[in-house]
Image (tube, rainbow, N blue to C red; front, side):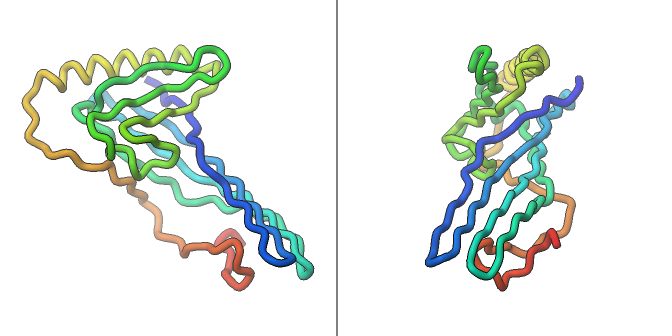
Length: 173
């Protein structure tokens, strides 16, 4: 099955302090892969930073390293395609409220993946396969405790960037 592209909602930041204005827009894009045993979600955040002050005007794009999380079907309660024509989404429902807490745009027990209209058929196919796997996993006894899914990355950690502090170096250059 081919991967399903998705977007996650992420809040930005607008900071007005004195005579300086900093605006950060965040875009989170990813892919959902079904391996037959686990749903792999991978995503990357892109921060568009605009800063205006007496000393400078700058616009930067900072791409964060990609993150990955494996979602076994046993921790899911269901998957459905919602939103109709205008705002289609693949909504993952977890068995625990804190399951998706480390994923941007999640709500307690739910993770809405925004999808493009052209990918609705692929999303329906993925939802059907996941729901079958959830049914098979529910029939098996489970002895694992509830735990939030922790994202991982294979890239080195980058230093934190404070966009409002002009002395903080920008890792994007």
